[in-house]
Image: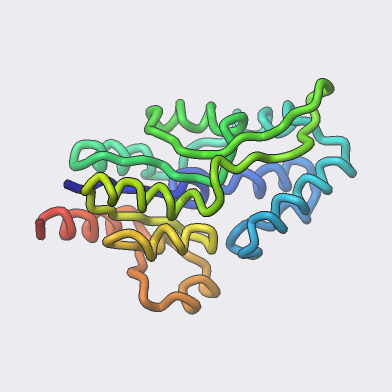
Length: 202
């Protein structure tokens, strides 16, 4: 039996922090896990920028409310759920993801959480567990599932390598070139064909 584990941002929805950067005009917030492989370094940089610019959680969720899924994402998810089970395994935060999950049809989401002070400012972040994407795959494999996983960034690599079938989806060239052993797909149609072929070989 198969379960699919997928990233969220850059796969089904636009990168949240890029959208926040565009709305606020703060270019430094455009940095994502496509650019910086160390997630702790990236998040501490983001929190410092939010603090310096007095940006609250509500300012970010207002931006997220305006974000829609990528073209074709909802249809692809509906097809995928008709074929097998899917869990979105993301480094995003439960406080940010709600509106996006609603627009995607509320798939199962494994993610992290934020620490918010009484004034509504983000003061920290809490990982559900270190290397949570890979550990989610490992746990499911220990339940005798075979795993298909796909994502687009550095923070997806350990998940993709741990999966039985790992696929980079629309990766930047730096990530694709650094991990040539992984399958690569640039459209939902290509991704669907890879998944269908994998499911049909069992």
